[in-house]
View 1 (spheres, rainbow, N blue to C red):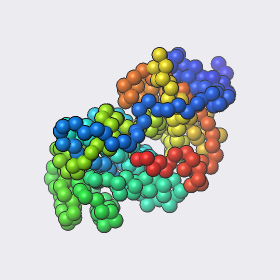
View 2: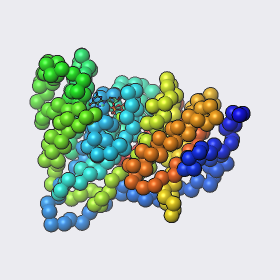
View 3: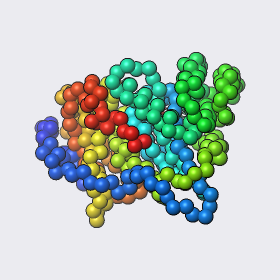
Length: 343
Ligand SMILES: Nc1nc2c(ncn2[C@@H]2O[C@H](COP(=O)(O)OP(=O)(O)OP(=O)(O)O)[C@@H](O)[C@H]2O)c(=O)[nH]1
Ligand SMILES: [Mg+2]
């Protein structure tokens, strides 16, 4: 069989996975999202109300997105073993009795000087500044934690956050004696309200952390209407991006982003239109794969996770596009949504 040309429609055996031809770009109309986050003061029932933003921060690969997913009870943020997977602030709004908690997963804090690196730091910085509680995650499986120590110190000195918790993550990977040895150096930080030993992966200690977070939230009106869950567009982009990180290697995932253009509901479910944007022509066949198989694989896996997160039937329409230089200029990155002040 001949290779698929870029202009061809790629139809998988799964009728829900279709990549549209380039020309369909014009047909995609931005529609209002079915459940986009819109800050609004909710009406107050008789129970006392607590609300707070909780930023999850830390070094790249510490397990922040895994923790967000664990706290939310479902997969919303992309997780991969590669550092710098998260490039946006991801919001998950949860209700626990009288408390509404807005967890925000953030990009890992790294000292890169590229335009994208600077924007990622701004995203993290904004989430920490807006937070009522910051959870700093430290990967305790690292033998040497000097960098993590410096990072904790910089968060504590730079930001005036009401409550900071430190969670040592990945305890499932480390002997108890090593955990204590490595954790002791963080006791110097008096501003840390409490320390937790957790495994975001298997859930150990996460309930205790959640209770401490909820207990620390200020008494105030809920920010979001009851049953708000988060930004569906962002979650949908994350799920596709996760599959790209899982299946493509070296620079390709880092030079790719997913833009969710529209979510359109009809009797058959929710149609989600996404562009997978790559930086070079040569990356397009890599994303498509032989006879479109890679794109089909990415789309099938992403659709399953998106449908689970959004709790509805989903049809995912993917289109691979090349936008050279999308990463090199701050203006292009802002156009691509890399600086989203809403979270
Ligand atoms: N063993 C173990 N692995 C974990 C745990 N938490 C996260 N991981 C793994 O650590 C890797 C990084 O997890 P992520 O949640 O993507 O980390 P992150 O801090 O969000 O990373 P960036 O977004 O790149 O900054 C993944 O391979 C996870 O499966 C844990 O508690 N135990
Ligand atoms: Mg992450």
